[in-house]
Amino acid sequence: LGEGFRFVDGSGLSRENRVSARQTTTLLTHAYRTFEQAPEFLSMLPISAVDGTLRRRMAREDLAGRVRAKTGSISGVDTLAGYFVAASGEPFAFAILINDSPSRPRNIAVIDRIVQELAAIAEERSARLFPQKGENYPHTLRRAAARR
Image (cartoon, rainbow, N blue to C red; front, side):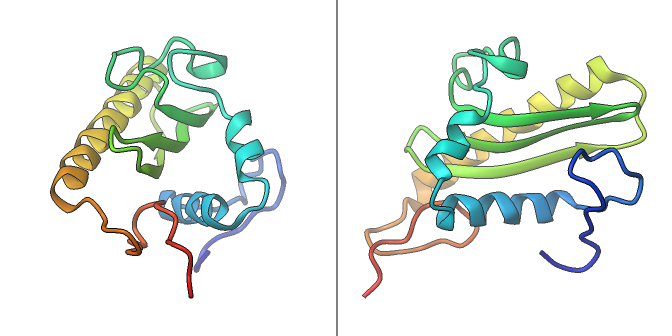
């Protein structure tokens, strides 16, 4: 996952853990593309405006039910990482990490707004550059067509 990646514990509580948003997104993309249990993994993630920790988040019509993600929070830190599905059906991985910020309500609002903006960018990109059959864009989660 690159330089600087380090997990000391599985809980995420150690101050020695190190992971960037890019590394998290790379891991999520890889899991989606190659993990045999990806459907089960995805089904465990809360759905925006539907259940779990996202039940009351991203309830606007344009994002409701289209985001599956894991929240994370501890003193001064708020995160959200997972996937959203563009209207085209194309899934995208994302990770947003806010550190050293004491205002949890503001952090959550900012994170949700970033997801909304990412979804809008994805919609625009999909409308302009919708992948043709057999093409694989590494910066998206679109599964490659069967490789020969």
